[in-house]
Length: 483
Image (cartoon, rainbow, N blue to C red; front, side, top):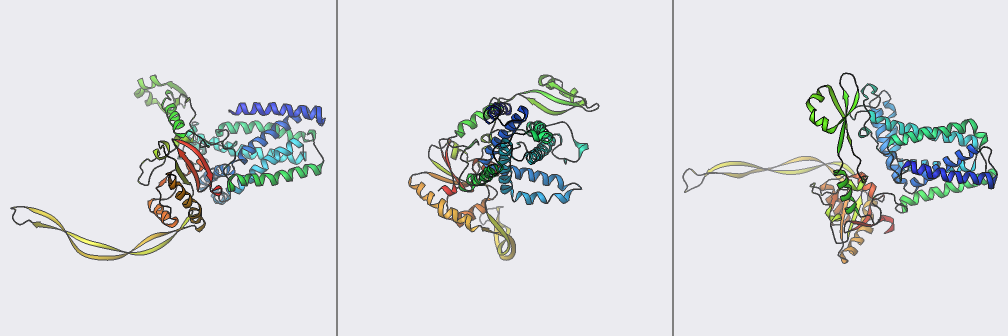
């Protein structure tokens, strides 16, 4: 579904809501105001709900924003602001839940007309915040990847590949919006936001103040439990991600890759080195006159045809062993049932230690072989053993993390073996030595592989979790608390 389709459907529902207010409740003071309340209220309810089903997804997106803000402000005169963002990143889940609940409750306040003046200012403040957020991200498209946002003299032509955060997360995984599109959406929402500020007295009002208070209080309590359930106790009960239960990952991946391979370059966007003029040159003409063109023009970007199938994270699905050998056929070309244990955030600490190691010293001697004229060979001769002190880091696995493996994953593995099902752990952020250490600590002696952290976060929100694969299909996934 596109943003335009979504907005159109919300507008239709808002019309029905307006008719209800006018002819049933008879509470309107202005048809335009009632429609604006209905449209924005329903929009906030929906955009909040698609995030409430997966609050960790919003939290991960907040982490992306905080990391980018930290990098941006660290190299400026405002570097004193930078430490705030790593701090906020540590509370990204709580921050995400608060934002989601606030957005939905504000939608309810708009529909009910609760505290019109306060609602108008809260709506304006939230839309302004979103506009700044998406505007900043969109404008990074003009900033070369090796330049700071505030180095305005270095800004160039807009390139979507320059954007530090490529998806605003406004509608969770339901609709992936480019920050540019989302920025224009927020600019549009500033129109009703300003309208509410100047005409809040025309807002319709439902129910008594006590009833509205009770409604908002009940909604807040329910939403707090609902958001928490969708990551702490279980996987999101509505899954908009590509790795949903029953997804034919092998088939989809092949189709997406074939579609990407069929994309063609049709033109080159070029900039005149002297005048700054921008023009598009057909690709055939570009290749024919490459040497003469590049004397006066520089290439900004390629203009390509759109893929027939929009790529998802499935296109980026990749798992390797710790020697960088591809092992995705374990999941995509395996006719046997196989349990993947994804771990996107291993929990451990390290402490610096010193240990004594022994080095054996050898020398190489040239010796003559008896009985063979002019026959020389090189022989290695042991001289002595020397001891030395070596610094290293001792890995200490989190006790609760290890206990989850011992109490839940190991019994699952034992049961799986009886059914001749395979199992492997796919973990990010560690090396081969740490993987061996984890296997020893947990007693789970299965193959350990590695994958990108963001990929694993997209696949499952539980850390660790369980995913059942067979014949290239992601059959089902479970939160660790559901075992």
